[in-house]
Image (tube, rainbow, N blue to C red; front, side):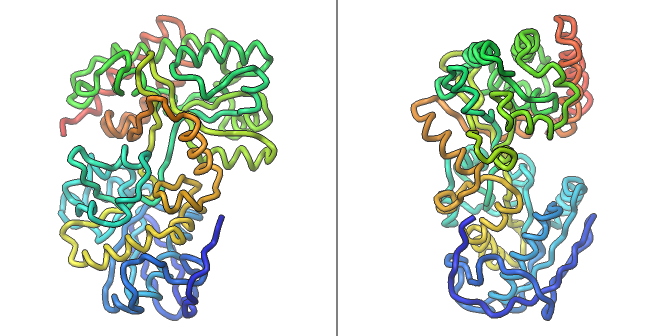
Length: 446
């Protein structure tokens, strides 16, 4: 992690009291807290005047826990010491979504709030248009595919991305004579798996979870040039799930061919990472770039990178599926809009962004930060973008956030376990029926 030394701040004094489950925490003067960057005021924070926001109180709602919450507290403390404002953190934890829905119903939102992946579908009507802010001109294309509305507007300051695709063990691929950067379709992926298995490796290290039955689905069902185009039916509640069989047939082939570990149903995530790091497997499909840091921690001499999801047919879009990582909106009716803009500009500076990235292990999404971010996930994304030049790659929001109603994630996880337990034709039909019924149960027209 590069650290930036800028002009020296006065000693930061703050309180470190963590509030949970919707309680607020206010940082007071006179108690020590860390700074948001190495001893200095951010270079692009929107104001050069110390204590320029004295007397202003900003309410900021987050869903952070652990190291992420600690890092955010320290950032807020440093902002307070520079600008003289008071930051009140509402930490709603696991109750974040339900609490914010209730606050929207009452039209009483915090000045600033984490969007948790829903800046367009849930919060757009309550959020200030931030398209004119300088950080919006610096977003990487992987971010714009997630947060830019159809009219070009952007409603968030997004500091980081949660990027999903396939994680690759390049050493295993090389030993098997496979060039992962030449794979463009799932059929080509399965051909590569056959070579990898023949070379004595397990092609796929993944274990069953909701991501396997959700994150890949768009490459068969909704993205440009794929075998099906059912996005509108999904959104309006009329889809019958029949085309989902394309995805299930892909898994059926992989499972019958023994491209997963034989004990895939019972291994946990740590087992998956350890086997991948040890060179036993070539791919983890439907995986976040954050896992690359874990793999290198297990095997510093390994060679791991990131790849997009292949397309379901030639000419279809290979997909990088991203989520709003650390992303913040301003309530459009806030009485402190100007101060909130200063705060978001502060968060967007590389020296501050890197503090959050260090705690969350997410990927940079602003070019200025990406240029100096040495974390494995961001570097792997850059390798992917360089090696896949000329490929037909689309950047999309996480599929279930875009197309599935709230409440479907649990169904997707159960469906994956059903699939791995029985991948006969009748087993695939049972998965379709289960998901269709679940979809009907949770769908509510928006």
